[in-house]
Image (cartoon, rainbow, N blue to C red; front, side):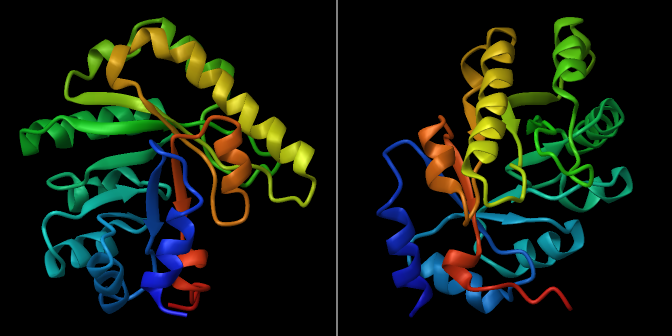
Length: 221
């Protein structure tokens, strides 16, 4: 089945107002071009250098989302063009992003990544620590950063009740933080190929779907 038809199948399942981030990490530019020709304009990558190479080779109206863990020394590769950094997981990263944003004369849009999964390997803020950080007014120190919402990854389990609980916990953090940021705070990014319908039912406004569009990734690259 073609990428265009796979895209159409996924889009048909999305309610109005839910953004589709096509997770293109590890896939070649030719594959992304096929999705682009089918109308997709938002793509998610997890490696800054790979994102930079693709951005240089592909149409400039693509909105690139950084969805993987971002090391502070790699921000420089994507800061000039990235549309949204979904994986901001620490105050240290906020500090580094502010410095790069100033150098680029940009305001960088970001999501706070919140740890809601039961696996310790997942990254992200502990919810209570993030809420305390925001309520203390810490983001006032970073005028070139604009917080658009929160992102999270549910537990890797077949137990739907656990996954739903993770999504509900993330939604709760979103609701607590929203009054601190106003109308710009509009993105609740949760749900991937295996669980995005449940995420949408729990309030997701943005889903990150890769394998249902592009097929399984080659992790050996």
